[in-house]
Length: 499
Ligand SMILES: CC(=O)SCCNC(=O)CCNC(=O)[C@H](O)C(C)(C)COP(=O)(O)OP(=O)(O)OC[C@H]1O[C@@H](n2cnc3c(N)ncnc32)[C@H](O)[C@@H]1OP(=O)(O)O
Ligand SMILES: N[C@@H](CCO)C(=O)O
Image 1 (cartoon, rainbow, N blue to C red):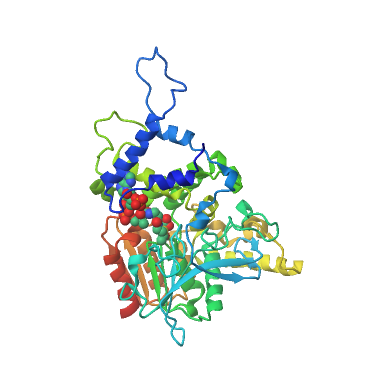
Image 2 (cartoon, rainbow, N blue to C red):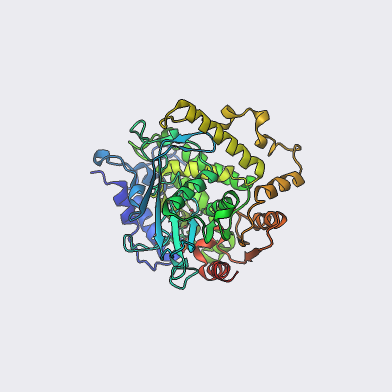
């Protein structure tokens, strides 16, 4: 009888909460052993006349036996990962920067602490790529949130003082409108008919929520990774509505290196035959592609020095012959992290959100170009005379000719000098005069400290005299903001309470 993939995943997670790396590896090893004991005969490449016995491939055996009984319906398990959030519904068309239209949107959000009388104590937390609105536990969802240690009474983001709001981003898969949502016009999930999104779009959606909550001005906008991009964007787009800015391990524009790393992830994901150009919701999800994508991503989220200390060159089973499947502890770790992720997040959200990160550039010319595209699409929508239109202007090239596009020169080597790029970036943040904390981590290869310095630099050169730049010598790489509550937490608390 076929077992569901979900139940297999649950089984694989049964291990003590305090398991060490070695224990975890041993558990993974047990899985592999189990696979080995049921492994199939060699299908090709080996015969009785071979010089040597064939290699064993327990990881391939595992993939080959991974089938799913769909009799209980489609399998987007990610929809059940997060519960207990509030929903904000915006029943008007939402026109995206690249011209696509969502006829209505909803945002999942959660709150902690108390809103004060004049609504001046609101902190908006922006998430990284894959997080939900569940930053901290509460009565309706008692599971620890992704920033559990950072939020609470007396913590870095002190709920005795502040009313804290966190949303799942537009394009996400944990309650907010995203590619897995049903398009009201068709009654089908959007899949890849979902419009291309920008970080600006995500932020504009969040400010609609703030309008709904009656919050005119944030005490602070706080974000890490993509959330840092959003935070910077909020301060630049809505300068009068943001009191303080915290940007952690983010950037003012995505670097080619991080774009390359995300491109590799998307390629791995889209190569999965189950991906089916994004129309997989009624069938088997592209688990294998997602798993590979997350393995690549995990390499970019942590650091070599950390792994040297944690895992060194230790192997799962030192007395066994080498194999191509997970063998070293670092490999079983990557396998574990990516296995855990592949059913907990929607593949299409990964594509849309990571693309929005790639496209992020706070330069004035880019922001103006996006605004022009959006306004063009809004005019098209108004001309249609109804809120039901879907894609007025699906791609930038359709809306504006190359010659009209202020961004068209960016990235064409030799056309723009470094000084011009800087001037454009500085112009992009010219209104962001809020007291600002920019925090970077020296071991971060995805958003290196050079990019953190760039954020601080453009803000200062734009005239912001209250920019604190803080560089952490932590070993956890990009994900330090999720782990190092002592140092990251202290920097945030200091900025929120002492400036
Ligand atoms: C806010 C945002 O932007 S994203 C939201 C948060 N992100 C996530 O939850 C994504 C997945 N999780 C992670 O990336 C990490 O767990 C973090 C960053 C949240 C925390 O990092 P750490 O505390 O260092 O945990 P670590 O990376 O060691 O992961 C622990 C897991 O790896 C397992 N593990 C550790 N070493 C090994 C190994 N050698 N082999 C196999 N498994 C291993 C542990 O058993 C544990 O498993 P479990 O989570 O199933 O209990
Ligand atoms: N590891 C985090 C940060 C990525 O930018 C995530 O998965 O969202």
